[in-house]
Structure formats: structure tokens, C-alpha cells
Image 1 (cartoon, rainbow, N blue to C red):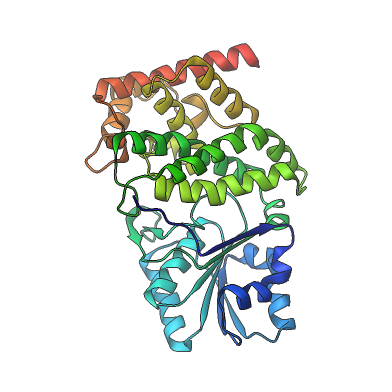
Image 2: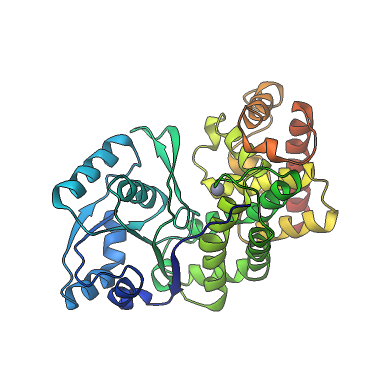
Length: 372
Ligand SMILES: [Zn+2]
């Protein structure tokens, strides 16, 4: 088995005020010259980080992120790094800017510090980046020999992020345990090229339990921009546990079903984790989980506004031939060669997948009728 994780993971309210101290302790050089890259808003929300660097007379340059993790942006930032020979790369913001800076740092063999400002993805802790075309179409995964050296999550920054991004992170994290469990059962190979360890399954389980216990409260606290125990636990689940869980645990049906839905343009306006949440429901049906578990997931999803029906991810089943052709396309795409659905520990065919999607939708609709 192979297990991986970030060099160091730091989380808490106002942890950015100790940024130079952590650099000294965990990166280890006395006088670092850093390149800081993030979106405009992220750079503003992490003003505290820049202030502490200035106070400690640590040199840095700030650069605005172009918005897409694409070859053009990677080349631009990479040549900036090689021209100026920075000692350290600091990536601030959401999944795309973090993925770009992990890639740029690895290309230039520099240490990288990741500072997420939202808890919507598991990009911060992983040793891979997703590269898109300039127009945002998926191109490839890039895997690195090392995970980020340091991940610093300031929960007072995350508390001010849009609640929908936290919820989407919860949707992504919801799948982690079920997918890792499938991989452990089938003996599938994880993102690091080894088998799933019992330790990564245990962290994935903690991820799931944190969401069930604290998800709803964290959603409320994020709406009120309040740092609380619940918010801390959910940020840890979305960022650290889900990140380690998917990378060392492995992916299975939930993410493959999500990829299947990418063939339906109407689902494009929904966030990654929102669609993964529905994919999780489909996987639980495929796994033949008992009713209590499925109800627990339905209850959790509806308490934080995660989708549990096809219409909640933009699909009108009575329109656009969804039942006659769209559904088949979703199933086919999710079963494409190399898709993680093949990590499931049992046999299935296209019809099984199509039936499970419709069953998930039916259970979700019934839940909504009975509970709203
Ligand atoms: Zn995901």
C-alpha cells in the first residue's frame, strides 16, 4: 500500500498571522524570496499574510492569477519564477490557482505553500493538478513526486467565503469514504500507485462522520461568517481528510458518475461537489447500502442544500430525451475505459448504472415530497 499527505497541515482562526513563523519552522530557510499568486479577491482576503511578511522583512512579489489552470498560464508563471529565481511559491485561493501553483513549483523544483481561501475542493493537499484548455475544457492530470510542503487554512478567511463553496466541498467529501471503501474491497490502485491502506479508510470514515455530525451547523455558521467548532471540523473534512482520502484511498463510482453528467450541458452550472453528492447517492444504491445509510445521506444532503434529484443538478427528465438518450450517454461516459467506476468490487453493466441513477432520483424526489 502507499499512503501520502501534505508535508505539514495547519488550520485555525487567524493562523496567517503566524505565517513567517511557520515558514521558518517548516520550510526552513531564513531569508526567503517568495512569489505569491492568487485571484484578486483571494489576495485581498489574505492581506494579513502579506502584512506579516513585510513586518518580518521577507521579500515577496505578488502576481494576479489569470483564472484558468491552462498551459498558457502555467508557462507565463513558470517563466516568471525562472527569471526571478524565487525560493518559494505561495498559491492562494481556490482549486484552479492552487493547482496552477503546485504545477509551477514542481516544474521549477521549488517548495510550495498552499493557502486555500475556500473549502470547496480537495486540491490543497494532493500531489496532482487538473489542467484545462484556455476555455476550461478538461485536458489532463499532472502527478508530482511530492505533495505540497505546507498547507495553511485560515478558518477566519474561509468563514467569509460563499457558503455554497463550503457546501460543494462537503459534497465532494461525502463521496470519499464510500469510494475508498470500494477501492479497499476491490484492491484497486490509488492515485499514488499503491493499494488503499486501512489508515486512509479510517481518515475517510472520519471525513464522513464529521460531515454528518457538523455539516448542517457549519453551513449555518458560514452563512453567519462565524468560525466555530463545526466550521473547523467541516473545513478539516473538506480539505485534509477528503484530500488524503481520495488520493491515498482512491476514487470509485461517485466521481465516475459525476464525469458522466459532464456530457449533459445543463449540469455545467453546478459545482463539482454538488454533482459528486448526487453521484454518491448513485454509488450507495449500486453498493446496495441499507435504507438507514441512504436516508442518513439524503437527510444530510437536504440539510445543507446538496442535490438529491436529477432536477436539482439541472436535468429535466421529461425534456431533451434524457430518458431515451441522455441517461445512456451518462452511463456510457461513466463506464469509459480508465474510469474509476471500475474500482467497484462487483460486476455491473450499463443498465445497472442507468437503473441506479433513476433509483437515486426517485428516492431523492420522495424524500423531498415527504420532508418539505
Ligand atoms: Zn472530487
